[in-house]
Amino acid sequence: MQGNSRPVTSTQAAVHRDLARLLARHVAHPFRKPVAEYSRTAFAALLAVWNERQPLVLDAACGTGESTLLLAGQNPEALVVGVDQSARRLARGRSLAGAFRNVILLRADMVDVWLLMAERGMRPAAQYLLYPNPWPKPAQVMRRWPAHPIFPTVIGLGGRIECRTNWRIYAEEFAQAVATLTGAAVGVEKFQPARPLTPFERKYGATGHALYRVAAPAQARPPC
Ligand SMILES: C[S@@+](CC[C@H](N)C(=O)[O-])C[C@H]1O[C@@H](n2cnc3c(N)ncnc32)[C@H](O)[C@@H]1O
Image (cartoon, rainbow, N blue to C red; front, side, top):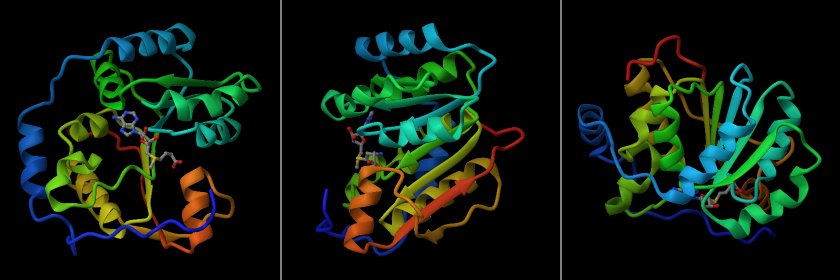
């Protein structure tokens, strides 16, 4: 990927005006949906390799899994789980994952994986949401993770959480949603990675996009 990606454009100039209302509604009505069979199969593969005492690091919507492998190198004590719905993207990481003992790459719907983790009371040590699809039209707000009905479940799992994006408003919405759900002060940081963690980070960096990060430490007791 070379440096010619377009910045995110949107008619939205600030945090979506419905975000607070949506979050309150999602908290009041916990999200339920039938879990897809392919996600259940992938989750069973995770349970088959996970030693329950091992910390879990989740790379949500990991694309090719490049970040999953880098995170595995940085967290040798953890099982690092990369999840993406695209078999084509995952194939790239899978061709390299054999060199790591602490990585599993799963083709699954991330929403299903979060639901299944919550159902089993699993508590990841850390979750990464790296360059999620921005869905920049105001009407698409509920497709963005911070306004998605699954988000209280994501935060309820606990652990450190980090989101990176090249759209400042996405980062602000993410920070606001985490702060609302945890009661913690959460800010947006503009940053430049020393080394790209993901293909999208590399592409945006090569184009000169500003990059934003929201990182919230593990909460002692998530309220939801
Ligand atoms: C913009 S790409 C970013 C990929 C990677 N994190 C990176 O930074 O290079 C967004 C990824 O999210 C994945 N994705 C979107 N919705 C998903 C879902 N519900 N479950 C699993 N993967 C999803 C897509 O397949 C795609 O690979």
